[in-house]
Image (cartoon, rainbow, N blue to C red; front, top):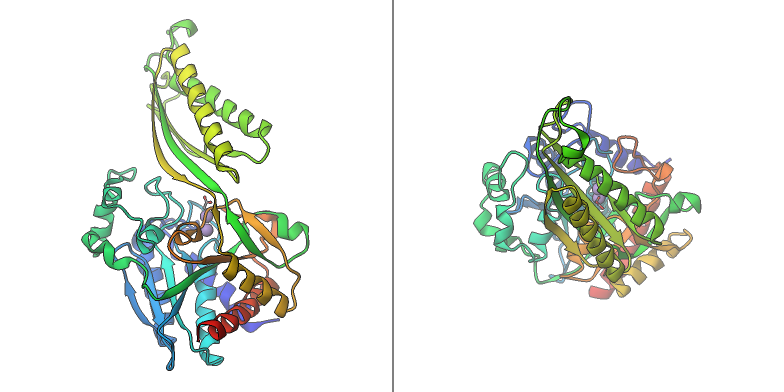
Length: 407
Ligand code: GLV
Ligand code: MN
Ligand code: MN
């Protein structure tokens, strides 16, 4: 089997040891293990002859400029933050394989400059607000975003300053004007490629997402003495609404809706819950169907809240439309897959990616690798060695085609 594929997998597993929680992979935006990841990847980038810096959004960026390059560059990369108790490959694999491709480009004497970006934040876990890194590179980071706070009341501005970076310098993070495109290699995170016994696919589009934070506010009282009809139980309201969320998604073709996070107060077994915070994540390939679903769920939340004598508060944390990938770059990727001897497959992505933000700035394409067991956002997430080797071969063919075009 392929040494470089095995090494790339080992590299992802090494980076997985850089975590906030021993025994689990958890690495949120600009937390201490991110510094370790930067040191580790910086050393690899410098070994490859890249010039390296960390921009004001905490993105680690390496630039490889071969002699005779035209001045144009391709950007490759993915994110290095994770969900709590994550797998080792979501995001990180795309950075590790991008660096393997820099090594290939040098070996193949490709005259195309390559910038590799390890995006600081994509998952939206720390601030409930995703894509901090790619928003900055795509020129879509409004300074007002710096005010978002994490669970400990620390703002994005503060987190950036605590890491030793200058949040007033975010403009300088915007992608170089000579960038001809962005390519992200990522695991599929779903079961489709495995079901069809395929290694790889190109991505046609990335589905739209809405994320909301909601809060039902009721009243705490004694669990033993308060009759049922006198209660204003915030958690009972939240539970009723969560079943509505699931029911709506089950009866709407193509809709997925998730309440993944709850915070109950005061969170004691013998106290009626006074408030509950809930997250909502809604996705559909069709933007108007997604919006209709979100509107309906908010109407249901209001009605549950009123009927139970509670108060409802909500804020929208993210509302991104469905984003098509660039047809020309994606056609290059499809022809690279064919040239490398693999069957062609094109599919939409149900997961969000930095590519959905970068696509607003420059032509963008994605390459998916099969996810064994369709598993992701789980510690058992994995990848097959043969698929990693396949992705590298396809990446090389893609670079050859692109270099010939921009030469
Ligand atoms: C990112 O992993 C997302 O799709 O939530
Ligand atoms: Mn990811
Ligand atoms: Mn993820």
